[in-house]
Length: 141
Image (cartoon, rainbow, N blue to C red; front, top):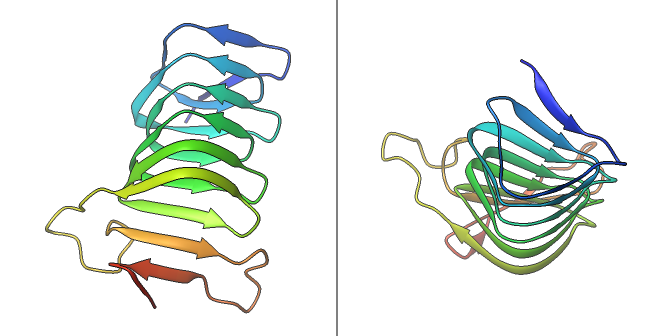
């Protein structure tokens, strides 16, 4: 699948939508609507807006709300200031997060604990030989 890339020297101000996945390494100051596509904010990327996408991966900085239809991942290099709304949220150890997380209900056809269920996963810095911590309904598992 093709992707639309925003390189480090680029800056966009205004609304952004795409039929392709989007990779941001530059500065984006616009609301993003990619409901059926994925968005990656790279290590050099900076987004100051709300982002709607199927899957959102943050390696850089985001100031705004993230709405992931499938999942939102904040990598150890990522920084998010805002609300995350998604059925599956992954925060790697070292990720910086300031805001709130709302776990949207999963479809009734999804098995509990499966990839489509509502899970908050706090992943260890190095996953080698270690299992991530899963939090569901206020309990650590």
